[in-house]
Image 1 (cartoon, rainbow, N blue to C red):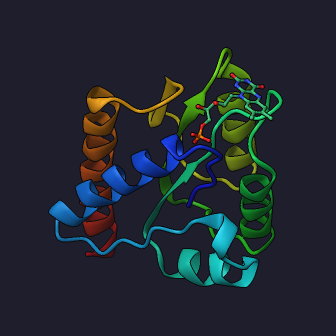
Image 2 (tube, rainbow, N blue to C red; image 1 turned 60 degrees about the vertical axis):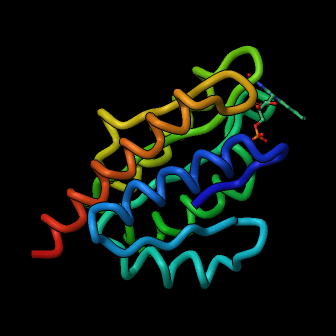
Length: 146
Ligand SMILES: Cc1cc2nc3c(=O)[nH]c(=O)nc-3n(C[C@H](O)[C@H](O)[C@H](O)COP(=O)(O)O)c2cc1C
């Protein structure tokens, strides 16, 4: 699930989803601008793993990402699940990653090792890392689903 202003985080989300698909796991790419909170909950209810993507905005995450995580927290949809955090930044990405990590910890999700952040537009290296992250999530999802 992601939000994006100029498309960088969106492109990484798609690369990540291709990585998940390569493992045989099912994946849904959710652009939060085009998705209700009810649909967020519906997708998350069904998911073994998750990834939230947000570019840095005013030293935190995008509001739609924050509200999606908050909605999932109330419904306990992320508890015990493993997920990734990713997104672009312009000049200082750490506050965004920290806020997303804190928000997801409040959901009792496991996000400690999976954080992918890069400056401005994606390049081939970022897309490759995103794909790789998707492979890891796909494998984890298959393991959880067994
Ligand atoms: C209104 C606005 C606020 C921003 N605030 C931050 C910020 O606080 N820290 C930062 O590092 N980058 C900030 N940026 C830069 C974006 O994070 C950067 O352009 C990023 O590449 C956008 O990713 P996207 O293509 O997925 O939208 C801001 C950009 C805009 C338009």
